[in-house]
Length: 460
Image (cartoon, rainbow, N blue to C red; front, side, top):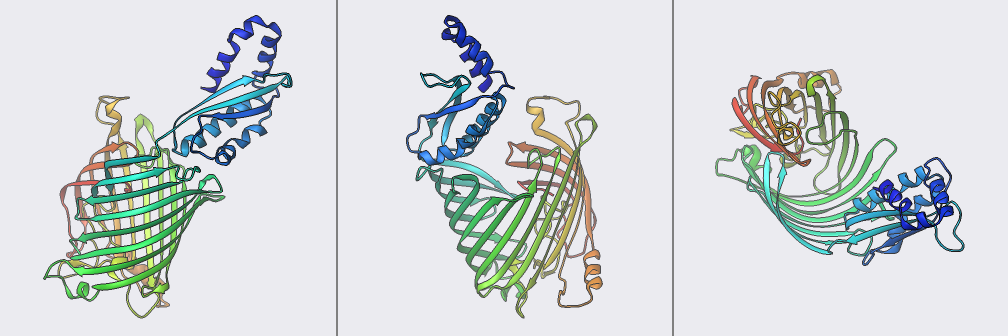
């Protein structure tokens, strides 16, 4: 778009009337010739502060050639678009005008149209194996530096409800560095574990780019209440009921080179998190999780995807980790062929979760047979064949016999395979309809043999 504007300048009426101007413009707009950016103007600003816009555009003055100017302007436009406070951003590149204009000087003009400050929305959202109706309102560009205050209420298909108030602000006008402060209340029912959880709390999240990937430092304080779901709730679940207070610090590292998060065709994801709970409150544990995904495009538009997940945690006092902090496994988003949270230790039909897990999966994605609707609606559908495996168990990290603990992770492996069709919903979620064949399971697992439907954001 910038190049098109530059050509428009070259073909302007002044270029035909003044031959020396034509020579000057031809020289300036040659991509390899040296130029100097004299001025950068931003028109259309109303609520946005000048220092925020200056920070996004400052690198344009470092450009030395016209090609550098085009690149710098494109990057500045991308930053302004990323701020999500403008309806439109356009750029005009022109030669410098005026008596003091340099021979090789350029004037850059950004024309922006600011969006509405107040907005309301009603939409559906997709979580892992759950859909929700979300009602909310936002105050955009609250203080003129791309801050956002939002209030949301949600009600999910699995009897979950919640509301939150969040404030997001770029740190030092850097859009890649964000500070998020949120207060929330949430409630949910976990049928296979026969308990209800209500959480009230707040968290602070500072996200910033690192040398290898994105980093996040998170503090969370939450007051949780666990209660029985039915009269038949087993005793191991009943003794977990009551109130708890957790204060935890968490670090998350993520490096994501995938072309898209929902149905990637190339690239990889590495995600590692560590959490320490115990600086205040009565919940004390350390937890670590890791996720790896590799994607490679093959012939005939086929994609091979491999994923691996794992987690380990340990209580920091004499008590076991509480049921609402443990790992759970099973369902259409990880180990298919099993019900949601339907793998692992249980008592009287109530699944209790565990302190260690791993899961892996291999997928082969293909287009629909004969490629109907290619380039249009057919691109949002994919066929896939898969094989999943995993295990969930308790380990004793106080024991010095680590080979024995590792052996426990290798025992009683559950695995399944199958095939199905998936529907991609933009770049935010996907639906899967699979036929699953569980091949290895324990007698206490909750198996889904045959057709299984899943919806979510993160799939193994």
